[in-house]
Image 1 (cartoon, rainbow, N blue to C red):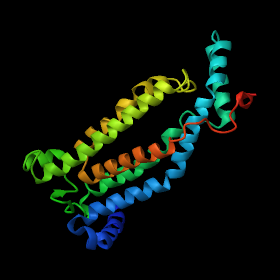
Image 2: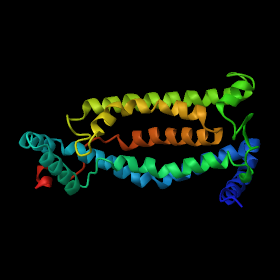
Image 3: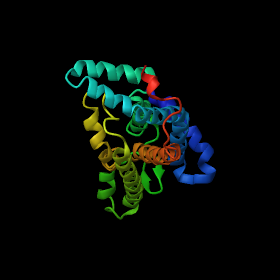
Length: 247
């Protein structure tokens, strides 16, 4: 028996519990509920990532001093910056942890709706099969057919969320002191520069993965933009981070 069969059965039981409210789309609703549960469980890590981001902003003066002092010794500069981040507990990669921990759940949704042993391939969201893809919708009624309209709604949601993320990221990058991001990790500065554009890559993901996985991505992305908006309302640096932190 496939390892995905028990997981598919568990999702099916949740769908049965939701069926009085959502009818034939109960499995899709179960995916949304599971996604929200996963993101709620990861919320403490998201809060920690935001605190780390504020801490890195507060470290900007020390980083600038290290760059000035060790400008002719890149290796020593790298060590000093790494030590500064370590002492302040502000890892440059802390913000990646919530995203990485979601990957197993995403792949689970992908496999559940591509594996016949899961018993879920026939489930639907309105008229669109959860195991189908956008290309299937285009072949069955076109972009404005019954299946295509489901994807169109998802694309609109993703585009709106990506636009909010893009504007927010550009604003944060412009407001951050020079050198805050990417100093302790080679190549991170380039990632930071192009990261705002990555939000729009979600559109491609939704277009190529099974609808069930796309539903997970859309729900998780919408959660992220709302969660980050709430957590970033107070942009003051983390308390206790002063130049003495690096001493």
